[in-house]
Image (cartoon, rainbow, N blue to C red; front, side):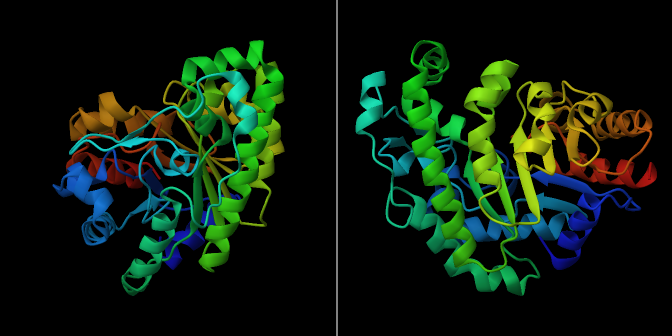
Length: 344
């Protein structure tokens, strides 16, 4: 993000109404390699390909806050790799981490990774270090320490079904696992933030929390997410969850979250009631059926309908209900920007 974009984001978080309304979009490996016309394996494996794709995107869409900005991620393999997950790298589809734990009893043998040496994490840091000068020469800065959330990581280490069942059958082991992962995430966030002095935000992605009912959320998600989001005194605490999110929204303020990307299944007004007035809402155009596969006219109509349904537009950033989906054409992103400006 550029300095003016960052200041605009801080103004929105402070409750100011920007004119025109800001547009933001989470971009990462599901969309960016295909949009840039490069093989996904090259995007992950070659820093020059990665940097060029990101520079092309920020230059092509200067009106959009591309979040978190120059994201040096390796898909869902990033954090699980530090725990020893086998990472499978197809040539041009998403990488996937294998399970590390096959029995609940194995959780007790799991050790906290060293985020400075283990898995893919040193490569995340090194890529940003090597590319930092060119990122800043383009007018941008590394703004966010990033990570998958505790429940997201746990579900890859143990298996999604096994993890959700374990919340009921083996709660003690689940708490042990989530505590270990949270300890690791605090270290990982701190390492990123101390390496890059331009970081003033934390960005977590955790869709598993959307599958919990309220009592389970308060027991197994709230304390761990709160610990990560409050581990450093940053200005922006950004959570992505595009699974069902009304339960999550009710606890955002307690967690310390002040920017939330949520599912298109929920209207802005529904989410505002659930989250309260102090959380900035990033959404909520349908990502696949409108932004990716619709026409520019479809996108414009969806943005217009969304904004017309909102009374107080403070604390709203126009986006889709999730990250930028694969195959989203440039023309549709342009249409989103034009519609947001025209309805401001």
